[in-house]
Image 1 (cartoon, rainbow, N blue to C red):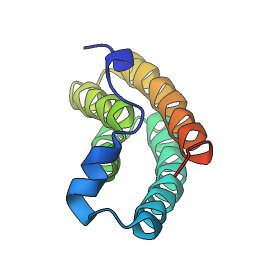
Image 2 (cartoon, helix red, strand yellow):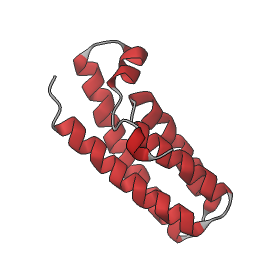
Image 3 (spheres, rainbow, N blue to C red):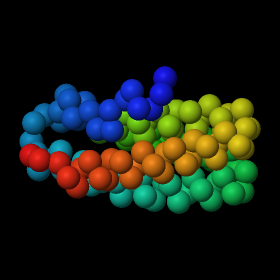
Image 4 (cartoon, rainbow, N blue to C red):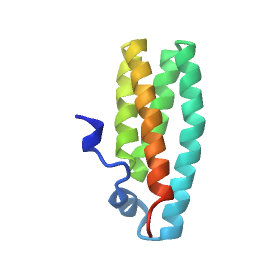
Length: 116
């Protein structure tokens, strides 16, 4: 599957999880973006250290949040990063980290330009 086939943000996902309260949804999105920023730094550090187990665990942790808020492209990149880190494939990890960074930027852009 190509990431372009996935939604940047599937708003139905979070509505199914917490309902249609726009204030609460916005809060969840902001928490996700903050977590993504922190996790992306950790993931880059783990990549540099070739700490594949930590890389896989952090990717899994962020994937759970990405899935919950409907960040489908982020979730997919994180799943691929989990697979690559499990396989100890540093080159593929790099590719997926780059894709993840782009996907997070897409989420930030989509959320900052959304109409409520």
